Image (cartoon, rainbow, N blue to C red):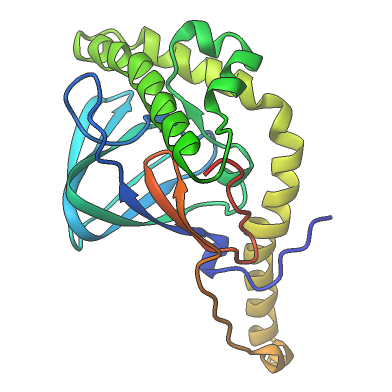
Length: 247
């Protein structure tokens, strides 16, 4: 089994983002719309301003973002980070390790989503840095916007059918990855919760021997300026989280 000692609190994943300022087809600057299948994501805004656009069974919503604000969205919620001016966000991800292992699906058009190989090629970045990576990240964002705008329009018209079909298609795309995800979950989030249970039992029994293992840890960025889904990404290689393969 995978071993992930000393995870961050709650076995969350951590990164920092500077939202893209690329203008999309609808005249809005921002990142690539996508959803997560099993992870809740939170934005803690540390500077600038902007918004996060979401699609859910309750329709379209645009949540303003400014320094000090916090927004989060549960699995299945399509989200798009929108740049308003120097937007900077600390991202907290549930089940650290799963988002980096592929728990995200872009809102590409249906014909791309229907072909796993075509989807993988469109989602993959050919390099981790440089002009080629930037161009590919922007093409990926534009393709996600191409599929996102019809989903949003349909929801605005009262038709949630295309959005629900996108969710189902996304689930089919990641199905084969679930066994590997389960191992990461067991070693990270589940193990952390079980450890707390054991500690509570020890306290109740008056035998807190586990406190002898108390320690402190620190780290710095393992990679800066990656090409993430929503913006330029600063990553932290901490226990329980893996570094993005494609930015």
